[in-house]
Image 1: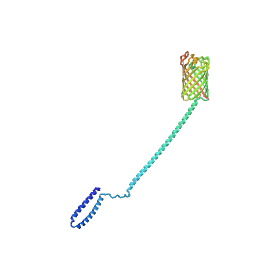
Image 2: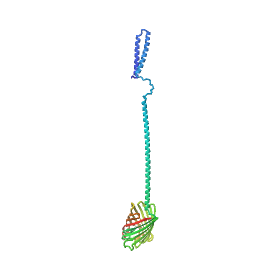
Image 3: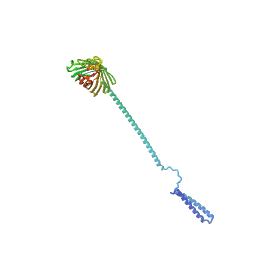
Image 4: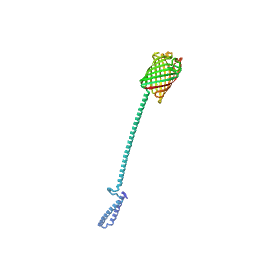
Length: 371
């Protein structure tokens, strides 16, 4: 196909050819004027017609675009409609998939929320179970403590076999002795009767001492106070004359550890004579039957006390002692225990004519019944 410039060149060439023919025709027809005019007119008309015809055919052959006509609705438009329909269908499918995905996400979130709620409920139930178990444990502990605590009324007795009779750093026997005791407790009031029985004839009387005591127990948080009165009814003992004392025991408890102090003030034989101890005690229960105890203390006395018992009127740190005890509960009432003690006089002036260090081993069989 020819372009626009080729079409214009073609037109120019046709015009030149027409002028050339026109000049040739005019030269040969100068004979007569009228004929020439007639011929020229006819020629001009023929040339014009030919030119119009040639021009129209050349323009059509050159591919000159015709005036655009409105496009008719034909079947050729259907593929485009199908494509549009396909796009719309795809978009609709994508929208449906998106909706399904959203619904699936919502369902998953709902499932996760339900699982979370179930987990929370399970945690709450576990916490509730733990709380119930803790409450049960607390109640059990309270019950155990209640079992360990003295009943409103308690009766007890024991027999203690010892290798020696040792009292506040003094040896009051050279041979084994038996020391029986009995007690009754009611509403914090404790009544005790203790005795020493010589197993050999080294003393004028086999029953060398009979010691009743009355105390009252006061408890406040970690502190336990036990004021009391004790009477030493000795018989034939030159080193320990009969007398009576006012006593005060104090205990500060920290779990298994206790800080202890015992104080005695003579009110009969030598009023104002004082003997006191401070120390620590440790106790531990293993299982339901076994228990272990240990104790260490140091004692001091004023001059009045030392003048009576050590023949020296001077206040001193008199004695230090340690002890240990292992007890087996045979049942809810009876028990058996093995114990050992050792003591040493701290001042040489107190040890004149006496043993400075003493030791004892004992075996105890007893029982206690709460009513």
